[in-house]
Amino acid sequence: MAGTEVLHERRVAPSILSADFSRLGSQVDEVLAAGARVIHVDVMDGHFVPPITFGAVIVEAVADRVHDAGGVVDAHLMIEQPERHVRDIASAGADNITVHFEATAQLHYVLDAIREAGCSAGAAVCPGTPAASLDEVAHDVLDLALCMSVNPGWGAQELIPAALEKLTRMRGALPDRVALEVDGGVHQETVKACVEAGAAVLVTGSAVFGSPDPAAAYVEIAELAEAL
Ligand code: DX5
Ligand code: ZN
Image (cartoon, rainbow, N blue to C red; front, top):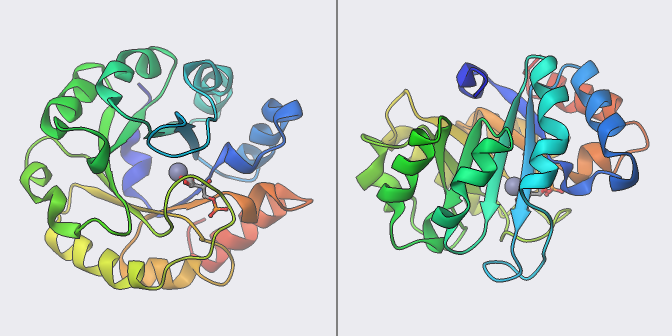
């Protein structure tokens, strides 16, 4: 695992969900060269969310170049029974693994297993899930909390405004050592509000990789977030 201190800094995290997969490596290189140090990888299983994206092979495909640039691979597992996949995703080179509160009956167990696998342990909550759902693990096995600002499954959705106030509540309730990430609908117009609400790691997919110039879009969003 690469050092995950970067997750405790303010960082814009490009999500490869919106990348051009025919040239994934060079797209990742472009945003790394522009300064990105957290690369977000959205794993979807067709059950927890309808789409199927990719799994450990894509983590492995990007991990070396991310690590060589001093960055971290942030794997967001939108999958049921995530405990069955933690070891493979970690072995493939993930540095942080985030699972959904809604996807496992064994949240404490799976977060512990993520740490055992050598990664930092994240838990995500969907828009309809109370922020306080993470309270029982926050002081124990949690390293990162992810507040979904859209319903998971697809890129390019609009940020749900209630997520901003939820972020503020989560930041207030979480111990300082737990990083707070926001994911969904984060772009030039919304990133500042997310920062003001308390998010540090700002996932952005379509606004970066949907742009004809991902590096320039990354820099623009990072400047707006004062995250350079
Ligand atoms: C959605 C994914 C996001 C997605 C965000 O379920 O978890 O990471 O890539 O895409 P944008 O930034 O386009 O909303
Ligand atoms: Zn995500």
